[in-house]
Image 1: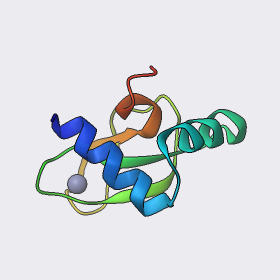
Image 2 (image 1 turned 60 degrees about the vertical axis):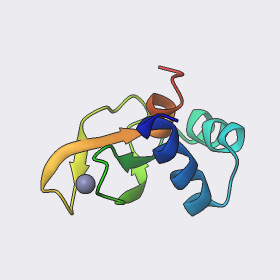
Image 3 (image 1 turned 60 degrees about the horizontal axis):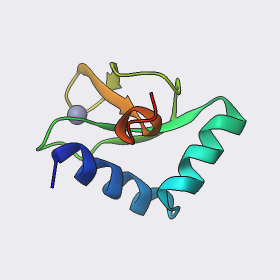
Image 4 (image 1 turned 45 degrees about the vertical axis):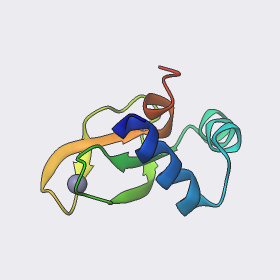
Length: 75
Ligand SMILES: [Zn+2]
């Protein structure tokens, strides 16, 4: 299993949504949930640009957050 898949699963657990619901919410709201892509970081956010691959992680102090759409491979 890829790290990206793990991140997607963890993010959906956090949101209490399945992947399809999370993607639908992002498509309708224009704001997506996202998760930090570093393996040892579990930072998540509920507000990130849907196409973001390099959003800000408050924990890493780096641009390492990818949106749910990126994690799911939709973008
Ligand atoms: Zn992080």
